[in-house]
Structures are given as structure tokens and as C-alpha cells.
Amino acid sequence: MKHLTTLKELEISEIMHLLDRAEDFKKGETKTYANMVFANLFFEPSTRTQNSFIMAEKKMGIQDINLNPEASSIKKGETLYDTVKTFEAIGVNGVVIRATEEKYYEQLVGKINIPIMNGGDGAGDHPTQSLLDLLTIRQEFGKLEGLKVLILGDIRFSRVAKTNIEIMRRLGMDVFICAPEPLKDPAYDYIDCDDAFGKVDVVMLLRVQHERHEHRMNMTQEEYLANYGLSKARYAEMKDHAIIMHPAPFNRGWEIDTDLVESPKSRIFKQMDNGVYARMAVIERALDRA
Image 1 (cartoon, rainbow, N blue to C red):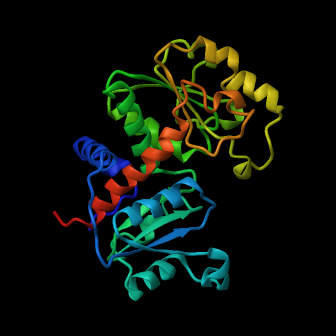
Image 2: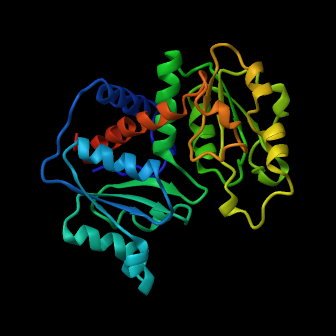
């Protein structure tokens, strides 16, 4: 049994093994876990993460239970720990959890006897999103070390940005960060967006997380796109081999011009496809005892 709460706990060799296994699954390798059941506990909305975990589970012969928080005892005051302990007690073999609280897993690890896979904790970590991002980049360039990546947008509230910045730098990638002042995290250094688009291999856009803001930025949609998003003018500056990435969902016309979502340089939907295989690798790691 192996939890996956954050990539910080993994050695580089483990991360590369997960990418290799994801690639194996994408190429058609199969792994079946008969009579296994996973519970997917998503306390924040999710389309890609939740459903790609479900698809990964189905591809591996695992039955799924999907909690509806609005129809659960959470509404009666049940704690997250007691909810997870309940699923353990009724016999599930693993849980995938997304919660609003950062590091929610600290109250579970050591007390729960089934693997926990983090589907996102507040603005903290999103390890499986980072794995699928790395898989997509490696498929494109055949390597990770030495690549230049621009991450721009809502850094302050983005668990995707925080996870990627940490692991990409550990992997020897050059990461440049750009954000509007209200959306900066003081833990990082920032560059001027206008200086970067023609110099990097990967442009990684982030969703403006309006639901996490106390109020919307004092900036129109058009101003945001022009200054902190990917406009057609900036697209034209990108290197011929450079690619566009976005964890999605994307606010069309905010982070990216709507015509560029499925442009030749875009790998956004390829990321979604890779998410299934990255999560298959994580499930295998969680269940295999080796």
C-alpha cells in the first residue's frame, strides 16, 4: 500500500518510473485488479480528475463508488476522517480524495489502512495533474531536463502551479513564472510576461480561479488576456516547436484566446488523454505490494 499525497515525498526515480508505467499503459499494456473497489471522494467540483480516475479504475477492472457530498453525512457534520474510515470499514480498497483543505491527508495518513490518492488539496498540491503534464512534455520532446517552461496566471491559488514548479525544477527544467500582482505567491520570483513567449519550449497557462478570490481582479477579460494570457499576437511569437498546455477547465478569452484552444501548438486535450494513463500508474503503485 502506497499513498500519493504530494510529489515532494517521491524520489526522482519513482517519478520517472510512474511516467514509464503510464507510457506502458498508453501503449496498451493492461493490469487487472479483480474484486477491487475504489471510492472517489470529491468535495470540490471536478470533470477531468474525477472522471479520468474513474476511467483508469474501469480500465483496471476496479469498481467505483462516487460520493455525492450533498447527499452524504458530511451535511450532518461528519468529519473527513470519519467519512474515509467508513469507506475503509465497508471494504473499499483505496480512496481518491479532493478537498478544499490544504494537506487534508495529514489527518488520515497513519490512521487509514487503505491507500489515499490526492486528487487536489485546496491551493496546495495536485500530484496526478503534474504527472500527466510531465508525461505530455516528455512525449513531445523526448526529455525533461533542460527544457524551458513558462507558467503564467493565477499562481497564488493554483495547486497545479505549486506542484509543477517544485518537481520541474527538481527535474532540471528551467521554470519562469508570470502573474498579475493580486495573484502572485510571494514564495516565487517573477518575470515580465512579454519577455518570455519567444524563449520557452512550453507555455503553461493557469485558470483564473474566480471562485477562490474574495473579489474579481480589477481587470477586464480583454486586459487579462492581453497582459497575462495567450493572445494571438503572443502565439505568433512562440518558437516553432513550442507547445501550449493548460490543466483546464479554461476560461476562454481570459487565459487563452478561444481560437487557440485547439490550435496546432495546443496539447490541452492530449493532457486529458494522458491523465487516464498517469492515474493508472498511480493506482498500480498504490495497490502493488512490491
